[in-house]
Image: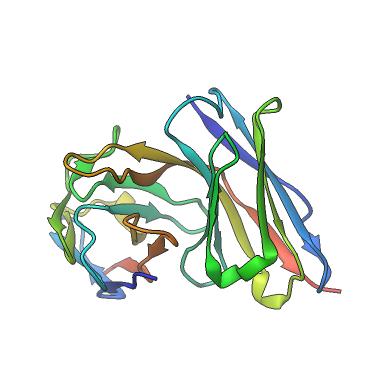
Length: 107
Length: 128
């Protein structure tokens, strides 16, 4: 199985802050990497697919970059509705695996 | 637009079989590059991919669940289902169904699958 490791596991930030979340794969996965947002009690929603493609309807303050083993999700200016948990997921090979999640909390 | 809805018992006894169904509306489960699958999330924990099925019946599943998992599809009902046998307390979780959208990757024969549509999730408790 390909291990996915996110950092940090949690962070505190203020509205307007720039937030960067890192996801590292245990082996090269090219750009087979996707990002999801999950709010408490809700299903995850897709933010970014194939490392850098913004899902339709997702605000442009979200962006993703990376290839191989290292990937980042950036929120350029944190908004109140962005406080949530963020998950990365690889689809290079089955079983598909997720990172442990990064919880973004209000500072 | 495509919507997914999970259904099934919310309470399962230890050693019995968990059975869930996902109904797809607003689109057909057949005839595209998409797979359909299941993901679960134990209370307070991360997401675990269980497996997927193509409308033709091709499946992939997580070896960590060994031979306990069966995923099937009924194209006439536009549904796919999950059965997990011999459940224990460790199987208690929110179970989600999700469309695995296939993306062709330049220079590769390997499609990239991402989960672009999710059901709301259903909570399964394991208790006698």
